[in-house]
Image 1 (cartoon, rainbow, N blue to C red):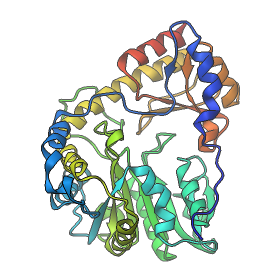
Image 2 (cartoon, rainbow, N blue to C red; image 1 turned 90 degrees about the vertical axis):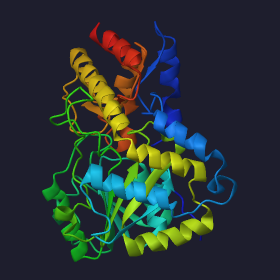
Image 3 (cartoon, one colour; image 1 turned 180 degrees about the vertical axis):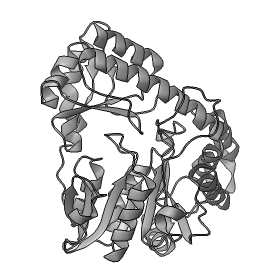
Image 4 (cartoon, one colour; image 1 turned 135 degrees about the vertical axis):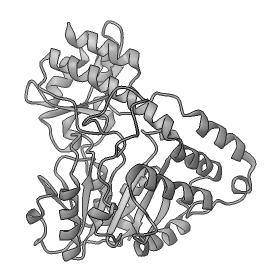
Length: 382
């Protein structure tokens, strides 16, 4: 039957008119919408890519499941950064061509269909819903997936999307709340799909210095106290796009239940969803270079602080997010598009909350340069 049709308000062409207005503003446009990284790729990553440019994994076909070195790097990263022992919980991994395709193909690769229900937060990354629609399955949106009573007794629930830290709100789930989701999903035979792409970008108790101790990670769905020592029925997604500025490299992975990973890997092999060989080497280097991740963490912490203060000065009621790279605010007018129009007049472009299921809100991204963030702050304070 192929992919099913989808519908979504998530269409960046809808802000084209606002960008034209912003470009005409004094000083030009400052784009705080999409969230594309602007900082350099770590030297370690670039060197690894160059060294691997003529490896057998470059001129020959690369492995869908990842090279032995990449798989080892992923396991090392989970141990060092997430307090997770993949071998102990019987988890496997498979690289994905960026996290978005991992999200979009998830329901299809899990063989969900028209009688199956996938639970997700009402306010969330739009591709969760799009991926469910592509599979022909049903979407159930709830206020809070940690409120398991809102979905546990719904017929047909096959999976639950969790996003912590959350895009767009920045909310972070505690280990206890995540454990409750895992336990409830297992009771009904559903899979927990935990999008943890911003796991190392958490801000509770974080400092501005890259030298102040180890990185702090948000709770992982594969951590032993969350998954009860077993990866069964749990899949975690992670990306290097933000932690290592590798969005253009398309480097991400899925880790978790070894039987589910094995099945997805077999299908991914047949449809050619494979990370290029040299990029696999670069990905391994990025995972091992936690010092560069700490430096990027410090950059984003500083930018978010400046942005939050500036948005307050402009009249938004907001605080530092618990995690992720965005400031989520309620529109002053009560409507995201009206606020978008007013912000565009001073050259600032945000993301309309309607894209994420909340038309009364806006999202501002901190993935802009120091100069752009400072300029935006100056304009917002006028």
